[in-house]
Length: 319
Image 1 (tube, rainbow, N blue to C red):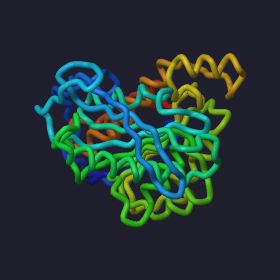
Image 2: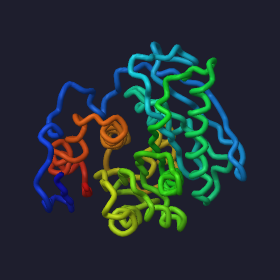
Image 3: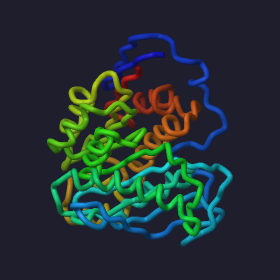
């Protein structure tokens, strides 16, 4: 397999031997466009001691959009993905992420932690672990909307800020069930830093290069120093993106009016488009084994974004 590390616009080729099929793009949905599935959804909660009750929404592939919509079994079993927002955030203001992923054939659970104003990323990490257990228990209930359509062996995690730090911590935990992770502008808590050194599954780190809350220089060390080079890992910086650009449009614009974060250099919609292109392709390739998405995260499509300036920094490690 080929190993490349990209620094800005420079590419250092270490080994030459990509599998040819991985470079081909067949007729699969573009990762930055909605997927082929309708989305059903319902509310749920779960308790994780010692923190308390986590409120969440489960979304799943359905035959029509809506509350408790009948499930679509055509692509089952579907991998599960746990999603989390950051400090002071709730699951409802980052719903663009689980909605997009569920449209591509994932069962998602997006949670709000008991204390969303806490600076303890371990609270978020427990939310990821509890979210996986909740998905599995819902899969076993005959009256559950997701009964018997979850792939109980395959899970992903994605979180923003404190949720990103919690995602790293949960992924690096002993006996973690997360098979692929995507922290967005992750909080660099001491517990997250320690856990990062234990991560052995594929992990993609994203940040906006205009992020005034978790700037790139706080995210990059996860890639360069903490996550081992024996792990498949990727780091990308979205040109013009900031921190609030990772949340839903309405909330992002409100935060912008309040002067939160550094000014953005691109539209919020464009930041979300770039972000979902990379995290969707990451999960499609690593959780579903769809080689057609290789080009979006390791191949020509990614190189095109770097060359066009859509990404200000892009580097990865393949083993």
